Length: 120
Image 1: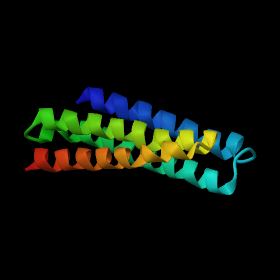
Image 2: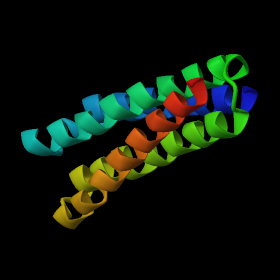
Image 3: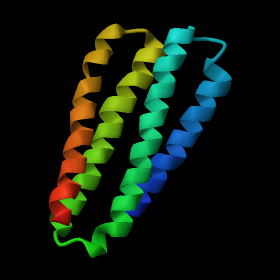
Image 4: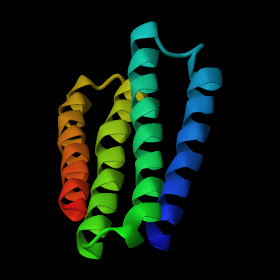
């Protein structure tokens, strides 16, 4: 599904840009703990951006295009919730933003479960 490949590519572009921003601009401004949190966001962003691309490439081989699209959008939402909350937490220092992170993790898991069901 072309939409997912495009969406995943945009997510990968942003992951690389945000990773570079963290490595160069934020290293001098954030504590080591906050940098580690930021880097965790980048790692999950990359993994699930690639996941969206992979899902888009595999979509035609799976039985349920609806579940495939749902899975891709769930991974996208997971990036926003999980990685986005970690980016915001690390830059602002507002610890309450960490409460959003597990919602993103659950959203990632739901996306992968949808792929499993689509493959059955």
